[in-house]
Structure formats: C-alpha cells, structure tokens
Image 1 (cartoon, rainbow, N blue to C red):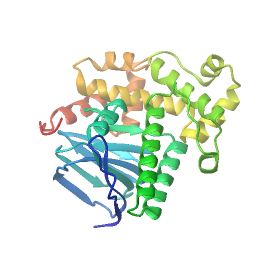
Image 2 (cartoon, rainbow, N blue to C red; image 1 turned 30 degrees about the horizontal axis):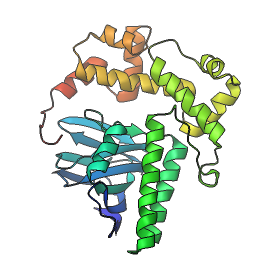
Image 3 (cartoon, rainbow, N blue to C red; image 1 turned 180 degrees about the horizontal axis):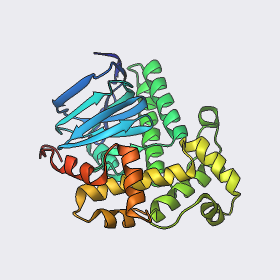
Length: 293
C-alpha cells in the first residue's frame, strides 16, 4: 500500500508533448509495482528513502536524489526498501518531443537512471508540488503547467550537460549562477577524467578557484565531498563495465580510475555489498526481457 496524490492534467495535449498527470507517492515498506508496463513515459524523482528498479532483467538499487525513467510498454518492477521506503514524485507524458527529450537527457538502457545534485532536485520537487497544488483545467494553468515541465526538462539537461551554465532561483536553492557554474564544471571535469588521478586541489587549480571554497560549495550542492563523489562515480562506471564487458577485474579497476585491484575490490564491496566478480555474476545470471525499446 502507499499514500498517493495524483493530479490529471487536461488540455495539455499535443502530438509532440502530451502531459498526462503528475503525482507523489509515500510508499510503505516493500510496496511493489509490477511486473507491469505503462502506455506512456513515467519519470520518477526520488525525494527520500530507497528502493529498487528491475528492467530488462537488470536491477538498480536507487536512493534519494536520483531520477528513473520507465518507457512506454517496457516491462518493469519497482519496490520500496523494507527499512527505508522511498517517497517519489512522478510525471507522466507521451509524444514525439517527449521521446526526443528523454534521449537527449541520457535515459537510455542499460542506465535509465540519473543522479541529480541536491539543489536541482530540491527545485524540481518544489516545481512539481506547486504544479499539483495550483493546477486547474484552464488555459492559463495549462500553459503554466507546460512551462513548468519544460523548465524541469531544462534543469535535467543542465545536469546531463553541465558545461552549459544555468541559473537557479535563489529563493528555492540558495545558490547563485556563479556557484552553480563552478560546481557543475567540477562535476564535468570529474566525469571526463575519472580514470586519471583527481583531487580537490587539482580541480580547484583547473577552475582557478580556492580549494576550500570549491570543497565547501561542492559538499553543499551535492551532499558529498569531492573525494566521495569521485569514488561514487568511479564505482558507477565500473558497474557498467562489469555488466557490459568480459574484462578482467584488474582491467575494470584500471579503467575506472583505481590504482590497485585490491583497493578497487574493497571500495566496490563497501558501496555495493558485493565483490566485483560476485556482482557481475549476479547481474549476468538474471533473465533478460526484450520487451520495450
């Protein structure tokens, strides 16, 4: 069972972008949907808690600060964590422009998940809440709703393409556009150079800012230290490589930015609960569904 708030949006219909409804769910422990499929795109934003998503035989363990996409007619199962069940907002839509947008935002199998920096997630959740509480089936509200959804897409595009600065509402996020630009440029440097030696000092030098300043705003923005963000990103990349290649564990460690196999294995197990070889086998042994796109 779960507590839901659902707003159906009427009048926001177009063959390019058809907005259907938005809602919020406070899930009880182990609440589950599926296996099942939807006839539309369903974009979820995890506000708090944890859960897991299974799609095409692959399971993702998700947490607050992430978004995940369910595509039309794609067989999925998702379930709230037993100890820390998630609360999430969602947005349902169809249309050719919607399909193009999700491709541009990087929601492609086998990774239909995006990690969103805390201020951006805070603003997206605020926008969805405002949409739910103020929406009425009138022309004015339909146009405002469309504007809100396009603004959310723009914020997700900024997360996916951090080299393109964007301004956030200081009343919602507390961050200026300059601060936002510094953090997103640091994230871009990490994600382009994760296989190399990286540190807060090196990033600060490249951005021509003070190391202490960068470390402070980075932690405020992402909820992680720079070192923890680098490690988390490297582990996420190593998960992809383990799942999609037959490379040795030593090679996976090297291309993921870890200087020794032993250190990689220790960090990987600390973050995922499994040794790299066990993780690979557990994922590859799951059956694969070919439903969806």
